[in-house]
Amino acid sequence: MASFNPSTALNSKDLSGSSGEIHVFIGPMFAGKTTSLLRRIKSESNNGRNVAMIKSSKDTRYAINSVVTHDGVKFPCWALPDLTSFRQKIGEDAYQKLDVIGIDEAQFFEDLYDFCCKAADVDGKTVILAGLDGDYLRKRFGSVLDIIPLADTVTKLTARCEMCGKKAFFTFRKTAAIETEVIGGADVYMPLCRQHYMNGKAVAETPKNVIESTKVHHQTTQSSCLEAATLAL
Image (cartoon, rainbow, N blue to C red; front, side, top):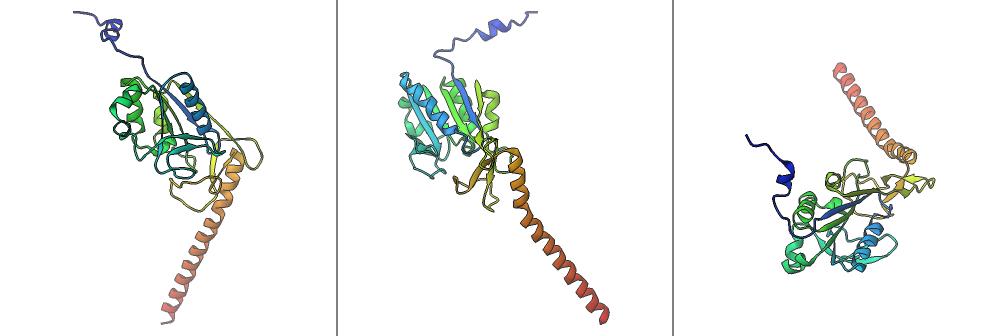
């Protein structure tokens, strides 16, 4: 019976070209994720590598065909509804010549995992992405966390708490909207430390509790009045 030799199996196929890489920047809003992504992309470009930037077409806050940081730094990009269409949009020849692909606001792409796997593992591209790891409720946002097991490096960035200046790990929503995806900047969101996030959450939930309490009281009063009227009859 022949024995299995993992070294022989791993070296049995000659993979042409260089292997790909995946690098991830995560953190709350205003943590400098896009800034870090652009800095890395520009560095790769300055070193002679062919680069392309992608962002979700959902993000139209500052520009349509540019990735823009909160302080106004711009970089041209492909604004797409999904990542699968990128190869066809850019063209096969241009895709083959690409060395590095940057992805901003990665949480908005449902096909993020499959795209990163193919781009890095099969096509040998370096993929650098930035995105929110959690939403305003501190729950996972999109597929960004699914990329961590694939990644060569993961950098967790922090912002500054708007209330006290300490490190902020969480994104607090200042509006009453409850949808997971609400596009906005400082008018809608602010970064907070754990203490002030919990304080803000308690304040935000107080009106809801008052409303629910009022509803219960109103329903109880109506029920009592109805019972009294029935007995009177």
